[in-house]
Length: 165
Image: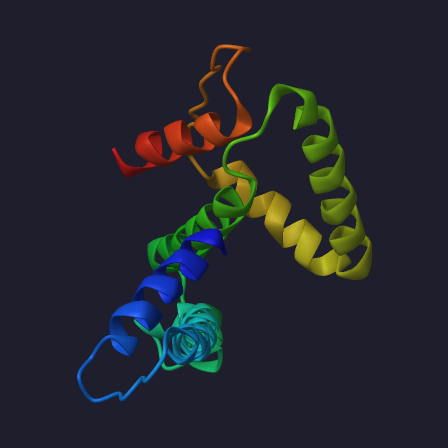
């Protein structure tokens, strides 16, 4: 969110400086910059939400088509589709969790367990299918311990660098 706010402020200011505007005083320029920045932030948020809703539309025309393809798939194709979809959700969750300060690891594990347990109780058939899928998946987990003296902000930046490699 901070990144989007900074970007929208810069875009708002640059847009306010375009020669199409006629600002007579500095307060007018300031007010115009704020209005343009807020508009830009709203557009950035809308684009992000739209992008998140389009997550399934990269290979399929929405979830219904994916669901139909998944139901008709067998053998290796079913395994590939399941693995691909699992990877999408692992990436989504990793984006949320990302860098975890050492003091919060216990709470993150507890929170994820609570959420998983709630979903399993709500959808017992899906829980059984997920267990079967997990037993077939081959995956590796990569993690790294960062020096205890690193601040959370520095750790998050370091995480972003590792993720981009």
